[in-house]
Length: 239
Image (cartoon, rainbow, N blue to C red; front, side, top):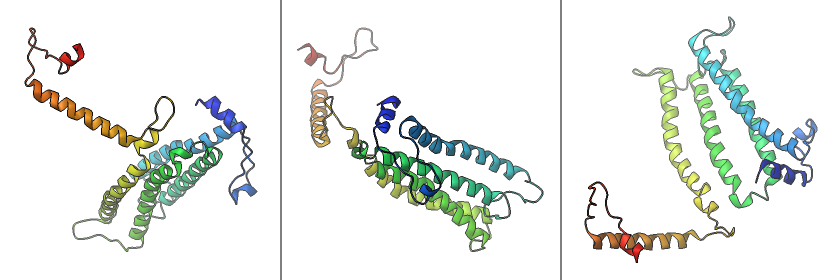
């Protein structure tokens, strides 16, 4: 429904406390529009912060940072890299927490859409690949990964990250196919769930009938204009 309907739904629910240990230091969000706005702001702040940290990363990669910091490099823990990584991590964690708080408020209403499976698939891809890049940068810094005769340390790190992502995305695609199935949204006008096996069977029969009709009709004749063709099912429609 609309945002107003969602706020009305939230107002009808009992107050929801924060997850331990945050319930000791954060007040409860008042149910209704304030609760919804807190969840939205918490989730969207990462969009803004991530954009800013990306800009800072690009600038630091081109020029030296402050006098007490060396050039920005992945795995260089004396540069701006660990500070931006920590900032991004904190922002991501708060965004995830706000989404969890929203789920706790409406979990019964959205249960048929299997939100946990969808949420886990998307966030696992985002956060696992990011933490994987941090781990690879740490291995480079610890000299576990080092340069070769033909590749530098940066080439080895980026190549390993890209190779692992190519393998991982295959399994992620299989999980996404199960989590984001089209069957979750198959309802008729009366709100009843549609059996997609019946739809597939009927669709297959329709395709077979059309193919048979095409074979019977043979090549389609040109119209008098010479640039249009007679519709395949014109005779059936007239009948």
